[in-house]
Length: 121
Image 1 (cartoon, one colour):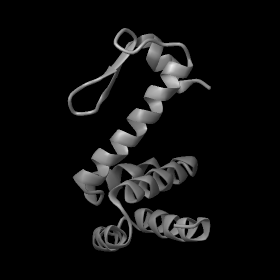
Image 2 (cartoon, one colour):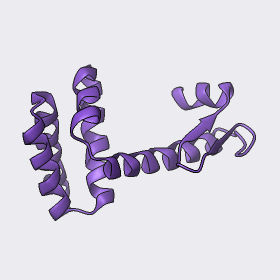
Image 3 (tube, rainbow, N blue to C red):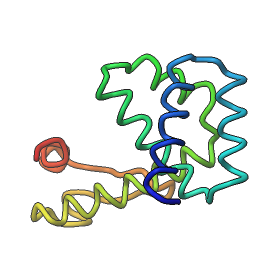
Image 4 (tube, helix red, strand yellow):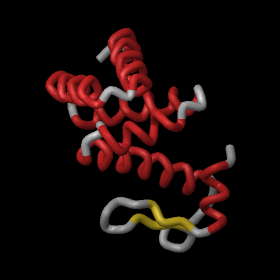
């Protein structure tokens, strides 16, 4: 997927999430699943959610998570974000197994220092 295609598909996803139309959202995700890998659909979802959060549209984010984003896509989003967070924590000098870890479901577990570090630049 080139940058123009990524931008086009992200714009579609953002607009669809903002409409809060379940059928439209499910149809778009089903279409994307035929054209892209699971990792690419999850990445596009992350970018779309980021844009909604930037626009302070948290209600649409929660609605999408509850109503249209399939479980396998959410698991892939969690995997991608956990890996990114894990790398960021290591870069900040925190110790895996001591300050943070990942459970069997891929959920990132963090102590107070790690939580603070992940939220600061």
